[in-house]
Length: 331
Image (cartoon, rainbow, N blue to C red; front, side, top):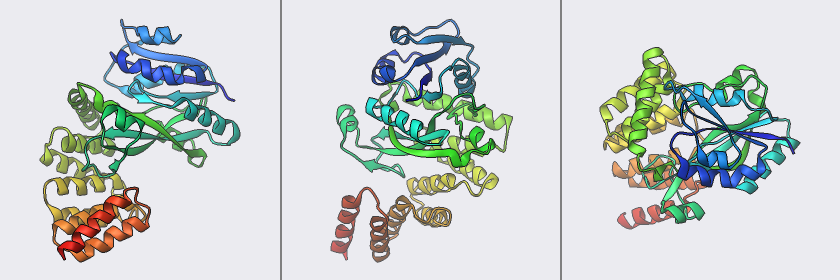
């Protein structure tokens, strides 16, 4: 199997870090941990990690890229201390890398939450939901496993991504979906709200530096919706995001979700229906359209849309069937 460098950035997260490294340390060939200058990580040291001190400058990509400089193995795995990659899944990932012609693999960041109103929320009862008392999760695909020495690097101050670097090298077709879960447990952090506020500050810095940075505007919109409940700011940011890039459908969906929170059901319905033009096979969009129709008392239409979501493979088939039965009883 190919050799792997595990690259991490860590800042005062020792409790989470032990669980993270316990799962993967036996399946990687080196561990590189970047810490703030003047700091260290006793937990990482106990796992034989190479500790790199780096001056923090409000830029997660900068810290990520610093860790990549010290990677010496064939492949790079990037995870955070509040994420868990099951050991068997990592072995399967290495097997894929050995047998496939891919240069990067998409993992599925499973974000555990109790926010049942989240657009992509999936009710679940697995090992993690039971252990940490979560109602379910939502899935965010993310590239976290890629070949070393290809010139790839991360971008963005916060919610950093390597995707753009890979695509600009003309290698988009060599990105494969591994189907493997990366379990994200950030919701159990005591200082989650403060962390989100710091992310807001960094996103606002990005916009100040580059007003056309639509992804930073998108992040501001999400944080303003879900964390600070500043709906006016959320709406303004998401609209600006779409003005810059009308094809960025995630922002359109987030705006539809925001309007639903604001009880502007007609506006929410309009945005969800508009988003179908860009993603016509998304069962979550259909189920949310159904919810808008219910609130607008268009019950018969809601039933048909819920059925459509089920036909398209919505993971909460039983819940949607129950909604249909309840509507039929009302009718």
